[in-house]
Image (cartoon, rainbow, N blue to C red):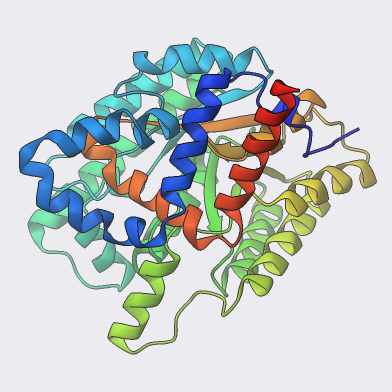
Length: 384
């Protein structure tokens, strides 16, 4: 019986000392003023090096697998003991200048996944491959200059090489969602890749951020295209990661925010998206990237309703490393396909991701207190 409140299963992989460290980390993250000023503090003190040391031994250690692929092996194997797989995420974004190092890492990551059954997917951000400003121009149908055209065409060529390698290795690729003002450009690229590489299997997955008001309709449109044109639609469903940034930009530039006005509307769209995907599961493969208990339970119920086995390869559940272990470990203990997103990169390069994680924990209603309550409950159980 699925029970997300079973902390013995949820924290079975953590020692008591690890739990205590996690408790104090979430305590700090719960201080909203600290998470709000943390980007400024890091900028001010970065020249003195010590912020890197502090970050490395606190939030980085909790939320990341390491600074490189090999650093992640210990965490990958530890999760595998609890039937949880890993999605390695080379967490660099908004790269400027030469993107070749990111492409090189991506090819090596596919090789690693091909040779490790505990890594069922790889994930990339398009801004790791293509300059943000170029994507913004493509998003607005603004002509690129000759240099930008050359860079863009070269990047698309390498992305296709990456997909061909993934197809040969049978390693599906997730493309993460990013800011709304470049997302249409990303969607256009990923749709072309789906049409090319998803004819026999769902190799290419796009990410749908359902905190956006327009994304449920977009999801339905993509699935209709897949049905009509005969390609599989791979989708990772998330609520979204840029709430504050999206709303701030909309206010500054005086346009209507693309984000739902409240969490209730976002939750409704997310759960409707799950239902629609399951109804179309013959053409769709999904990864439910959610820390919401109800949404995860709903998906298990939808699977039962449609006679889909818990380990059906078309359906995965996923949570971020260091968060919502009560969901991940209890789902895995009940035979569902579960992955943890495991970011890795040099500490300095991964800071934007870590700041978002801290801000996400404070902006999601009850997230930090829920983590703290569960950890407290388990510590008390172990003392008893």
